[in-house]
Figure 1: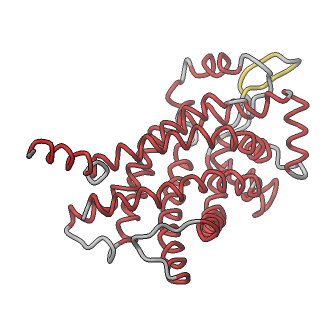
Figure 2: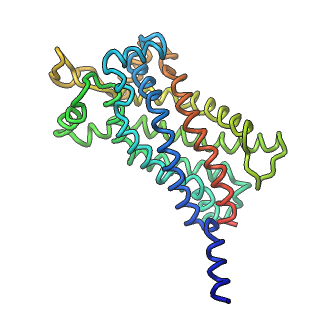
Figure 3: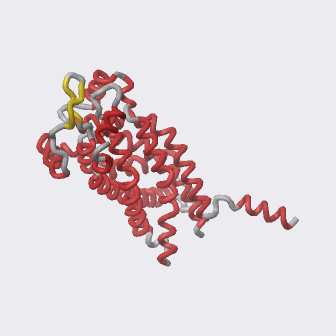
Length: 313
């Protein structure tokens, strides 16, 4: 009887340990990614192509250009790379977000709730450091594929271009990507905590109860808008540096473009072509991408946070 009682207790305790929460977070995050990526990828293609063709009037004009150059399949150029990137990110980002702030609080001997924003700030820096090193090569290949001019053979073209300077090409755009991720994660985690606390106070929702329905949708929208306003300039600079940089003449590649692709050159050229607003090109498409992505992310984090509270109690 004692043995059976112990087994039952062990079964009930799943999800109430930090390692269990981390495992659940990783698996559920990757499942959500499998659902969201096919929806958001065409929007991402439109955003990236608009950022590299700022003279286009709007998203519809960009979509027509993509369809004319590559057909309908052009909206899924770079999909495999994007899917691999997002699955890799989901495997560690959800465990980090749900457990790392409380781990930091425990290690430093601080009260988590009283130091919530400080713990979130430390977590955002850790995530940005990890993502810049792991994800930049995926991001570089994805943007290259999305902005490619040829209908086929782009993976081979990228490989041939990288053979003599692999590290330089794979990590092109590392600095703005790191800055973007640091700003993005800091903004997201801070406003996520702020708006959820605000909504809980406004509607009298207890801390041990999930925010649901329209209240959660309101949270998602406010978080998206706040994050995009701050992140878009860094996103445009990163895209400019990572875009397709092979010169095509009569449908044949004749070498790399002579256009300078340094950080200062990117900032100067974006400003010259569109002024200050040039750094915000594609914000509507980005808003839709973020809203799809954050709708899954914020709901999942709210759900997983309930387990994290019990695991670290």
